[in-house]
Image (cartoon, rainbow, N blue to C red; front, side):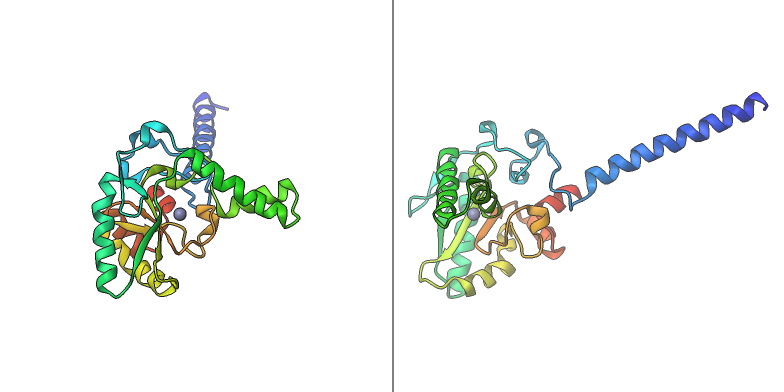
Length: 221
Ligand SMILES: [Zn+2]
């Protein structure tokens, strides 16, 4: 075989290998169904940091916090937008209340342990109880509430269902997204939570709302 034919075959084989490897990494990093991707939160804008089962909250990411009327804490940069959202909800006839804002890692630890204990009292083994808890509560260090950018919003007059419906279609106007939507559990790793909203800013929130996305999908788009 002439040397240049051999050289051409070698180049073709090499190109094939390079393309296959590239494809493998491309699908690995852009598949939104894979909640296992890691993001460098240190280079993310503050409103777009990602804390989930694979991305841990660190102290350097914590924004300045303010205390709300009912004693909850929230990021200072978010509080004005939350007030605007609440005002709009009130004008629509609802009584929204921030039932949980910022949580320290210790508080999250208590919530997580309490939930495990509740399952254990129901007769589940420690392993089963931990696994069940994992579906609903984040492990300490992996809860979005530790960022100060998340808000659990419920109605102060008992039934929150109508408020949840209103929030779903209006919160994005004020920069908030429904963080754990129904049908996206495989991406967020958390069960549907109609009360949990996350501030991402109006630009991202509008995009996420109109494209029926999660924050994970938005960051990978
Ligand atoms: Zn929450």
